[in-house]
Amino acid sequence: MLLTARSSVLGVARDFSVSIVTSEDEVLAAAEGFPIHVWGSNLQTACMRKNHPDFKEGDAYIHNDPYDGNSHAADHTLLVPVFFEGEHFFTTAVKAHQADTGNSLPTTYMAQAADVYQEGSLIFPAVKVQENYKDIDDIIRMCRRRIRVPDQWYGDFLAGIGAARIGERSLKKFVDKYGKDTVRSFVREWLDYSERRCIEAIKKLPKGKLEANQSHDPIEPWVPDGIPVNVKIDIDPDEAIVTVDLRDNIDCIDAGLNLTECTSTMAAAHGVLSCLGHDLPTNAGIMRRIKVLLRENCIVGIPKFPHSCSVATTNLTDIIVNVTQSSFAELEEGQGYAHSNYCNSAAAGVASGKDWRRGGEPYINQMFLMGGGGPASSETDGMHYLFVAVGAGLLYRDSIEIDEQRFPILVQKMQLMEDSTGHGRRRGGQGTEVVMGPRKDAIHILHVCNGLESAPIGVRGGTSSKLGENVRIDKDGKEHPSPAVMVCDLEQGELLRARDQGGGGYGPPVEREPERVLKDVENHIVSEEIARSVYGVAIAGSRKDDTLKIDFDATEELRTKMVT
Image (cartoon, rainbow, N blue to C red; front, side, top):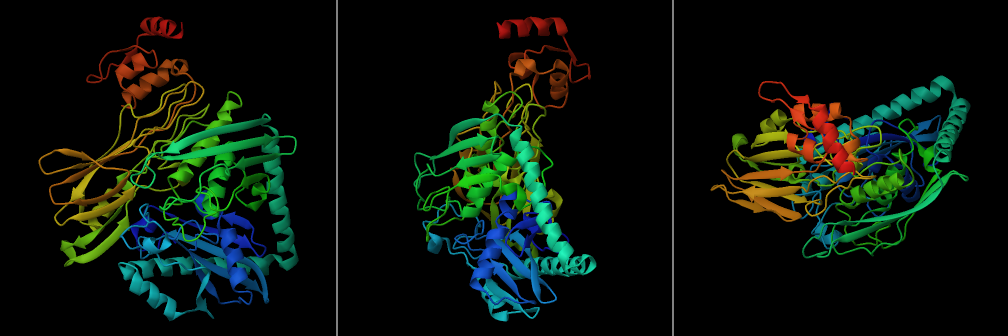
């Protein structure tokens, strides 16, 4: 999939996932991919079987229906049922975020869509796209007619169906090698083993009931007061069950921010799983011990048609992940995480226009030029490039050189920002600043953002990070801050400055080892001023002549005053 995809959102940023689902609609295995992508594939295979009870070998189905198992309409999933000697054993699932899906505006994140009709995306509820291993041309023609830059879409379709078919051939060989009975036994035991591993992890947790909330930034005119998200967590180590309740939230709204059953479930599960250890198998066995309670017609639940779910993979999902994993920090020292970046900045917007270098040929693509700092834990500093929580650190930043070759843009700056992190005994990862603009003809950028008015919080004495921002800089250098929902045309000579956020800190900053603070100063992660005022570490010497060192006497005096 990676080597053959045509759009950079797939072939560079890797915004796709591949998984193997059992004949009973349980995720059996997944390659490296986002939890928010992978875990819905079982709901999609169930939809395939429901709508096509007579499915057979050689079939393939395209599925992007947010009301029946998918994440959001922009994620096209190709499903291939795998048969051996006439018996259905598995389904391969390849889910890929498209550069365009036919929305009424050139974006795949359309917060301003009042409903699915205004959104305009083509919706495929497990529609057959291949039979007897051959394309059904009616579906291909429909997509090519409605989707912008159709050759790019078709190239990505070929990459996805090719990957799914490779999985099919490999699984046939797998069953042939070990035999049907052995494979059936392995599937049962692998999922049961994974469940036992999850039970062991939950039994190590303290018993507790947690409740927390966080609000999404206001978005005019749709949600002028913001969107509060309430999360209730019941940790029962005796029964080895963790329950996350998302039912106490507002109804679906007339905007594209509503989540789907898939994304609501997996945002909550992701927050729990991140606190259970780093080596649990990624399959349906571990999900047997995590219960997520949803209600219908809830903004973070099961959407009611025709409410739009265009932005269902980010924004509110990032809040759920962060609120869930930070709540675990309330249990005791050593548990949970701080918040990570939730400013999906305009450097991750959808850019479109015409390329004068190629005779005015149209282009459209989701950019991934931003960074986003990860959360601190009790043991480790946050990673510098997490993107956002639901990306789980697995999205790849675009190559500036490749983007500049493929699209008529010029990136003037991409840098990690000093003092952008949340501080603590363990600090968050740094935020990223990107400055970019058109080379000649105008660039149209559409985007929806959070984190312009709310910052990732720290836990157990750690501090929050800084706010994000999106600013258009006109030809005269005057700055024009952009709202959360940005519709921006950059003319030649204009620039866009996008700043995302660092992650929150964990524990009191004065407990951070002075040697770590010195290294952070040397690496321009924190300034000497912050080292002194926040961490209580006095730095002597000069960066200019590479003589920075810790003044231990002054540091002891500073920290004594700060603690008392």
